Length: 447
Ligand SMILES: Nc1ncnc2c1ncn2[C@@H]1O[C@H](COP(=O)(O)OP(=O)(O)OP(=O)(O)O)[C@@H](O)[C@H]1O
Ligand SMILES: [Mg+2]
Image (cartoon, rainbow, N blue to C red; front, side, top):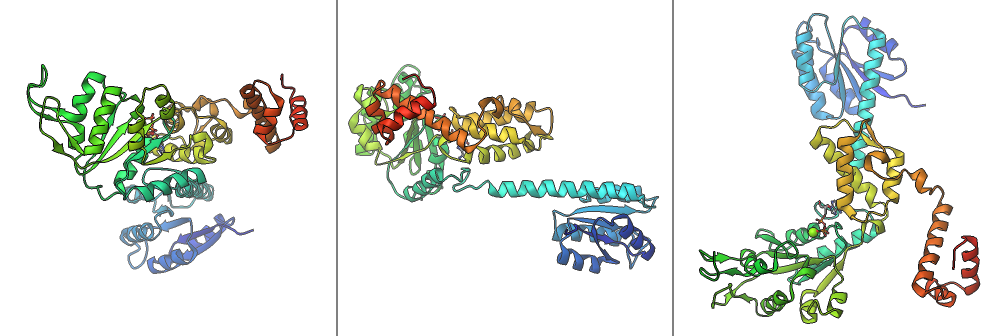
């Protein structure tokens, strides 16, 4: 078996032997001075270094040792350095730790203590490199967007292609899927990136205020209009206007917005002047606009205007692997912010995250992980901390069980949709009628 490499920097031959003997479980490399230490550091890349501070040419003083410490950390910042000090220079030890040493051990060496400190340093090194690896996996195909699933990578590719154009973009997706994030990305990747990104949430502003909010108003346009005020559209001039929750725009304003999109000029409320405005429009909604059109709640002509390009953002449950990826990145961030000692998710928690349906999508995931970091009582987050069902109660274990459960679910769904017509169920699912009967029996479904 390959032993772990440890670098011992020590000029006293007697102590060198003692180190080798104390650390016999490791592959110990010995250097007697700074130059030798740095050479070995580059060559063997040891995760842990023990460093005697009194080194030649000035063994009575810590300066050469402290210099070695800072060189080591500069060349290989992940290295855990354990400083070895004479029994009367605690103060220097404290200084070394301040400079980034992991720990210190006083002479004379206590082999047990040394072994313990080395093991601890190694463990820390392992944890940290595991963490870095996970962060690397946390891929960001677009700034701020964590994704690895083909579904989401495709969305990001589309945004990259659309962003530099002038096209009006419609982002469609459930709540919390990242519509606003992608709207910002569209702006950032466009030639307008140095101008404003102005967002307005059409659902959050009462109908009677929305018009003046969007178009601005002239002094005296209504009670309280004490001075001429620009609207959000004008504010976005040269930049990008993000119309969020577009499906909630009242019909009266839909007509006005349509006029703006056609003419590219606005009139402030109470004004006569036609003001040209150059904005790139990005819209978003979680509503089904086609259904709203059918109910005459949304203008079809406006719909076509704003959907020059539309991008469907898949819900989190349809992005295999992404929930775990995003959860890990959020955990790392939150741990920093909250100065928490939480380290990782338990295997059960990871399974629970993977299996949860995430009706609130990434926003829900964010909230659950944030809360878990605050509430967790141990260094590993359990499903309980996330307020998720433990996988055991969800009951999936093998791939076969997962497949069977999906199969049963699909049959039930198809039966419901078709009102129990076996022929239609068979057509829907692309199987024969006998197969449908067989599955109904197998899964004991009430048909
Ligand atoms: N792929 C992702 N990677 C990292 N964070 C994400 C991702 N998608 C969304 N988020 C984060 O999740 C939260 C919700 O995203 P966002 O506000 O963009 O969603 P939305 O679709 O606009 O939601 P809503 O419909 O509720 O307004 C934000 O905090 C956002 O930063
Ligand atoms: Mg939003």
